[in-house]
Image (cartoon, rainbow, N blue to C red; front, side, top):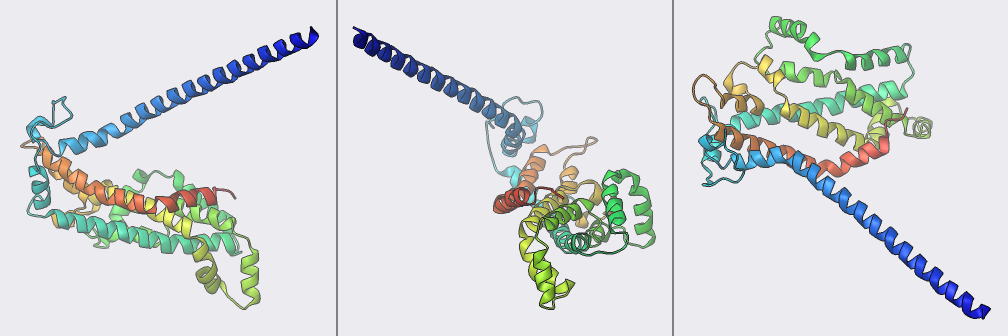
Length: 303
């Protein structure tokens, strides 16, 4: 009798365990479903402006403002034709070339100057190193608007206004404290035994920096390059302040030329040029995103 009772209890216990596992599995599925639905909703909210811009580039200007329909009723490529023709007698490719010069110049200047400065702060002992590093980090707290007028006066007296020099010279002088800080933190995580072994072999700072540090700094350099390229490509205020000739304008300034509240605004061509201006940034990010994730994961911003 006891054997039958034990068997029955065992069956009931097994059934209860199966029901418990099934209930737990259903709850996990429910939470996963809710999580994915919320994620999709957030993605839709984030991507909606980009989708709206893309759809608007195929609409006539009269259908962009005040039209609630997202899908164009009579789509055409006329806006892209206008955008490629340019505005003010300057073609799209001139604006595009200017943006490429500024973005590539910023990448080159930042990777060279900031990596050298970071090596000095991270690997070279010199009097006042910590003080200078603290002062450099302190510049991150200084708003850009505070130095606009003094910088403009200096560049104007030097005759450098209406050139690319004011927009690029700071990149080659390690004036971007964020990138110096990022590279310093990355170098501090590299073992100093590498430097000591190189010094035993007779290598100096130049050889150590070129042959040891630069190859190991690839994730940090690529991460800095991505940020520098995107920030320079999207910069509006700097070119607006220092560039006066239309044939020197970058794409963000060219986009503003299509909107004139006093006369006629060609929103369709503006949307088309915005899409064309977004393509290089997207390609640049997609190509190097693997290095961006690797750089953030490895350097970790630890001291």
